[in-house]
Length: 339
Image (cartoon, rainbow, N blue to C red; front, side):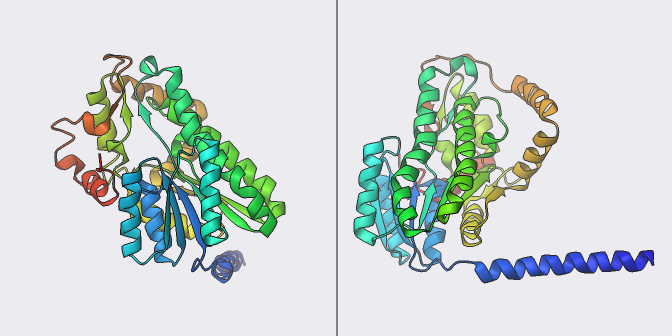
C-alpha cells in the first residue's frame, strides 16, 4: 500500500509537470512583428537581447547615449535582417525619453515590449564613493527604468496589453561589497518591478523581473573604477569573465526572451545567483557576515578619491592575460571596445 501511494504521488507529480509544460507552450507568444524597445541596446547584454529578439522576428527600437555605438549596433542588426530604429537617448532625462517614445510610436505605431536595461557600474570601497556616484547610479539605473515605463504606460493601458521587462541584478537582492551605489539602485528597481507587476495586472500589462548573476558581456571594460582602480579592475574583470562564475551573454539573452514569451514573472540567471539568493533568504545575517570577510580580501581605499577611470584605462598584465580571454571575446562581439 505504501509503495502504491508513493507511485501514485510520483505519477501525479509527473502529470502536473507535463501539464504545466504543455500549458506554457500553448500560451507562449509569437514575437514575429512585435515591437521591442531596449534601453542600453547598443552593447553588452542589451545588444545580445536585441540580436535574440531579432532572431524571433521582432522589430526593434534601441537607445543609448553614444551615437557611434548605436550606429554599429544598428548595422549589425540590420545585416541580420531586423527592422531597427536607433535613437540617441539618455534615459535619466525624462524629456529625452518622451521624445524617443514619440519617435518609436511614429515609426511603428506601437511598442509591445519594453526592456529596461540601461545601467552603470562604479566599483570601489565606500571610502572612495561620493554622493554623486550614488546619484548617478540612481539616475541611470532607477530613473532610467521609471522614465520609459511611465512614458509608455498610457499607450499600453489604452491597448489593454503590453510587457515590461526590468533587468535588475543579484546585486539588487544581495548587496555585495565595493558596489554600493550599483546595489542601491538595483534594489530600487527590484522593488519597482515587483510592485509594478501587482498594480498593472488589472490593465493587461505584464511585468517580468530579470535577476542576472555574473555574465560575460564585456561590460567590465566600460565600468568605472575608483580608489586602487587597477586592483579593483583586476578582481572585477576576473570574476566577470571566468566560465566558473559567469554565463555567456547569448545564453542570458535567450533566457530573457524565453521569459517574455512564457509571460514569466521572474527569472534568475546563473545557478550561482539562484544559490546566493536562496542562501541569503534563509540566512541573511550569516550572508552579510560572510560578505564582510570577503570585503577584507578586496583592495583597500587607497588611491585618489576623485579618480574615476574606465576599465580599459586600468589594464594590467593579469587583465590582459589568458585568464580574461572569454571576457575580451565577449567585449569584441558586443560592442564594448568601441572606445
